[in-house]
Amino acid sequence: MKGLAVLSLTSRRKLILGSVFLVLATFILTSGAFIYLLGLKSPDAAGAVKLFRAMQLVKTRYVEEVPVDTLMAGAIKGMVTSLGDPHSVYMDANMYKEFMIQTEGSFGGVGIVIGVKDKILTVIAPVEGTPGEKAGIKSGDQIVKIDGQETKNMALDEAVGKIRGPEGTQVVLTILRPGSEPKDYPVTRSNIQIKTVAGKMLEDQIGYIRISMFNENTGNDFTRKYQELEQAGMKALVLDMRDNPGGLLEESVKVAGKLVPKGPIVSVVTRDGKRDVHSSTLEKVPYPAVVLVNGGSASASEIVAGAVQDTGSGTLVGVKTFGKGSVQTLLRLDMQTAIKLTIAKYYTPSDRSINGTGIMPDVVVEMPASPAAGQDVQLDKAIEIIKTKM
Image (cartoon, rainbow, N blue to C red; front, side, top):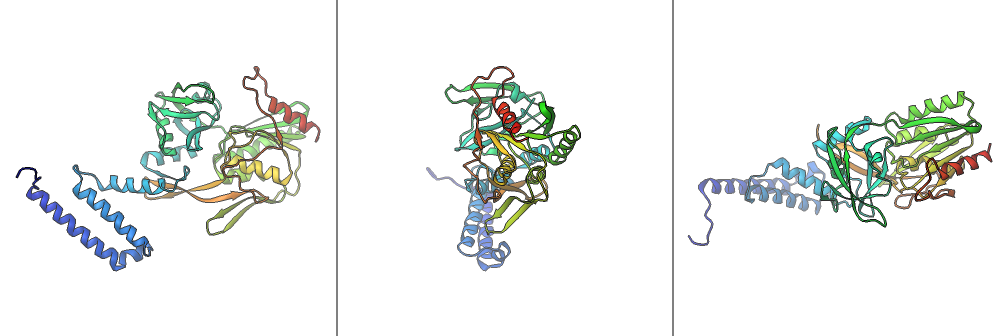
């Protein structure tokens, strides 16, 4: 029959079976039993029926066979993407595996932490001593392509998954820097071992501790370094959290608990208004402190900086921080996949939300565009200030 596609008997059977299944499923949904299990109410129930119908139509009518797992993963990913929150993402098996590796402090990659700022994939900070830092990638760089693929509308964790990979392999990042043309940066991946805390004694018994990010070991490592400096005669402390992209909230609370007096460090507030307050038990701040921050200081590092500033237990020096004031949790769907979902916002001790705005330092000091070798005007200013407090 000219101009008419004819279904084979097998196809007809599939179509009939699919239609019967759809009718049966619709009956179950509209009967209330399945809706009760989902906890849905109309019009949410109607949306659930629509989603199920769409899946069945694609499954039975699409020109090629599509695994149900593929359709479900796409539906979940689209659902989370529709939130418009760059920090809420669906993690497939690969992304979930990479995320778990990172929280343990070791992974294959180039050593940069990225986020989404003004809807653009942006480098929050390079990790010290990694291929990314050695290649010249800087905080604030915009990643417009990964291996030639444009990053516009790319989910954050999808971009992370593309940048990471086996040690010894190469990824090409196309970087756009303000005032410059896009430039390709070929970077060879390595095994990134993240040592988050380092420190030393500066002149005049001024302790210096650098925290590069907050992983599961940071709080204890900070305490050990802090105690080492105390035993060496520390009289004041400079805490450097520049280009610190954040990490685990609990670890930032441990660090802040050594720096701010008894009282709130951070409040985590969920959408129903429930407030979970994390507090310091420190009776007295033992040393004057200056905290260094910049545009690469985000999330957990902003919790520490905000607590120090609001309690007056130290002076913030540098430039305005990144401005990530939300909290995510990992919700597993099965043994291999999960949703990383924004569940709360956090507030500093004075009840400030810094989400999207950042924290302005008490003393603003810009780094020169081309500093001389060994020059660090922000650290110099921190030392100058802290000497007046000793």
